[in-house]
View 1 (cartoon, helix red, strand yellow):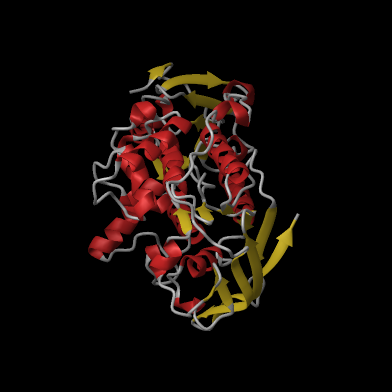
View 2 (cartoon, one colour):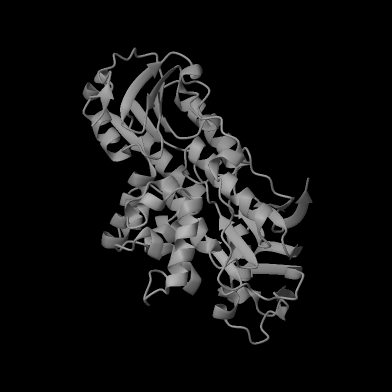
Length: 423
């Protein structure tokens, strides 16, 4: 439960931000908000919550009962909408309920820069009619019209501030202070004579007559550190799926992966041996009681879970990674019990344990607070500096401390996205 000043008198002309860490108990906080235990005025008012938690409930309801409650203009499944479209539909639904208070739970997560700007303008207009309580993990996401601030620390203690100085809690650490050990060496190094790992030449992809991207040309070489940018719907996920090997649209295109022409007989498993991959949705697959050390070992086998007894050497390697991450004390802890920040670091270690020629990181900082995002960025930089693995890092935002060598951007046009190099 929450300690500190837990009964706040809120003037009706104030909007509030509640700053959370990834260790904060968000579900308990939302429950306390609705019960008036954090902001007393709320208990007698109509409160509506805009949150991924609520959105997931709608999607599950739709899946179970075929029911759509978001007042969509089209008779489309919620699950088939893009992340931006889902948020827009949920926000319109929330407003249609005519609430006194609208609780916004990290509304900018997973939105590109243009979508964030449009949503910010819309929320600014809404704030003239409805009182806003913003739950936020990243300081850069703070809405400009917010007037008062609450900080919830890792132990769910509450503090109140009249200005933004009070929540400047990010510890100023240099990258050298976070990870003191060297990146562990793999048990067996990948042998590849190919300098060129990924090559796309004039690649065009269409779905149902709609062009996703056109004449795309891109090359990734050994040891290069790339950031892949682009707005929602520009084709980043499609592009990654053509590299990873599970998109049939890649066949018949001028695509070469690790020296092999796409469609020349390589299997998905051949590609997996050369690629380490992480996206936040993978975390949901680790629902069993897999220990942290066994989860990291599973990266050697490209398996979800561990289905064979690891060797002593493999276990030593896993524990070298735990030492690097300062997680030795968590070795036997079930993976699902780790904090969000700990899980991200462990999953990156899992993807890197075999030192693949190519490491693909899809939105690794999404949903993290400022400090955990910085730590993840530091680990990625360390991998780039100390290994031969090439990196493709996908993100909507430019993370402080992230140091890619090259940026490739998918730019949306009416004729489909085009690829551009950026400085």
